[in-house]
Image (cartoon, rainbow over all chains, first blue to last red; front, side, top):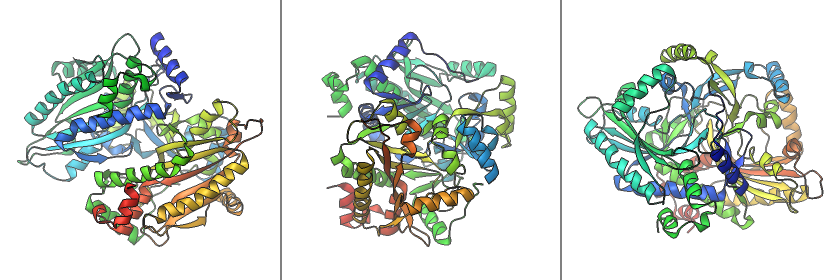
Amino acid sequence: MSEFRPGTAGQVAFLAELVGQGLLLETGVPGVYGRNAEFEDVREQLAELVTRAVSPEAPERLHFPPILPRRDLETVGYLKSFPHLAGSIFAFTGTETQAGEQYELACRHEDWSDFQAMTDLVLTPAACYPVYPVVAARGRLPAGGVTIDAGGAYVFRHEPSGDPARLQMFHQREIVRIGEPDIVGAWREQWRDRAVGLLGGLGLEAELDVATDPFFGRSGRMLAASQREQELKFEVLVPIAGPEPTAVASFNYHQDHFTSAYGIELSDGSRAHSACLGFGLERIALALFHTHGLDSGSWPPDVRRALGGS
Amino acid sequence: MSEFRPGTAGQVAFLAELVGQGLLLETGVPGVYGRNAEFEDVREQLAELVTRAVSPEAPERLHFPPILPRRDLETVGYLKSFPHLAGSIFAFTGTETQAGEQYELACRHEDWSDFQAMTDLVLTPAACYPVYPVVAARGRLPAGGVTIDAGGAYVFRHEPSGDPARLQMFHQREIVRIGEPDIVGAWREQWRDRAVGLLGGLGLEAELDVATDPFFGRSGRMLAASQREQELKFEVLVPIAGPEPTAVASFNYHQDHFTSAYGIELSDGSRAHSACLGFGLERIALALFHTHGLDSGSWPPDVRRALGGS
């Protein structure tokens, strides 16, 4: 059950500071905030920083809206691992009389869910998900595979929290590598170290760790143990507010999880592998505001230079 | 009932051309497409064009994720006018056993909606909606009111269609003016003419017309007639594919609809009015590709100059 998870005292205090400074704007729902121009400028500079870092690989840029065909969520088995985080989209399909009844309930802020039916859409849970069916539809991969920049897509996680670094919707800047297993593995290794350098260059105390996904339930604990044992997931952790550092980037080796689901093949017809690297842009921005202060104009010159690219 | 609305022959052919050229990527759900780098570059240049046009007014930039507290949708009465277009977000809140049952159904692409419950979030239907509660929370307006640039936010409309210009999720570049009724009215008048010039400068056959919103049902027809009589909505129409030109921008005078819902007051305590102007960025991009050809590199030099701002 995805109940509200209160923040620690430090997280609650940091959220209050961010709101007080106008960087975040409260909406009444935890994990859903507006942002002002200063926050957005930092987020966009971070996106540009990733663009520059990845440019030598000349990735193909593909952009998708933050909604995904429900069928794709089903195909990749997301509901096995993360049923608690998924968001599905419902809509009204009734008569005019029913619309009136629904409206009356809504006016009184009462329950109008009986008038809503499931659509063929869900919220995108990770920026790379729409990429695989598109790549699969093109047929066998070229030798060496493909590198896709899935942009700074909005992704959804149903996990209301008092921690300002745990948003229900945030920009995931994700690069996807699909190809021969050894090439994909080497690509992830290389990026793992580069990303620590990239974030360290912003004056953040970035450290790398083997990690696991927040799998659901008891069977999830087994999935997590296996994931850790095989070192399939690494994260870059940075102190924000709270007792433990927070993951702001992750490097995931999917093996053939997605490529099997969609039948993505190498040029010789054998199964491709995939990996992705994802930067949580709002989290990195929050880490910068936490580390260097709430006024980005007074950040250290080398941090501003690294962000501005000049 | 929001059923699939087939496109005309011209719209279906244009969609096929866009997909064939790689500008749009099909996902399997009508009205939900990926876009390639060329399409996105045009969309971003259009966003910049609006930024430059609005910069003399020095609007306050506020950015919101494409999800909105359900309570706000209820507060502004969206379900009275547009129940057929709204999207609500559901999520899983069950036990581990139920998660297993849900997963089994999903694996077979069967109905798992019984395991989903309504959350306190909906998809944002218009970029200006999150702005009003934030402005209201600040207290009375300064004299002259406020101008807010709500960014190029993603908005959702549940209207699957074969027309590539009718997307289920698209970027609405919206500027909101809240203040004294005469100031707000004059602002909308001024932008109505400027927007026609802005789009005409891109080589588009832009024409202005009094318009109505797609209100739901019989009572909606009365709302539309009243809206038209009071000239509360104008649209800029441009030929894309299809027999009629398509609205790519709109100018809406809300009178006190939103300001009453949130109690937004002028400095003297009287009720403020609001208006917004919204540019549909994907639609304008599609109009450019339709008018000037599918290769943006070969568009007329004056169009490219107007887009690039140089």
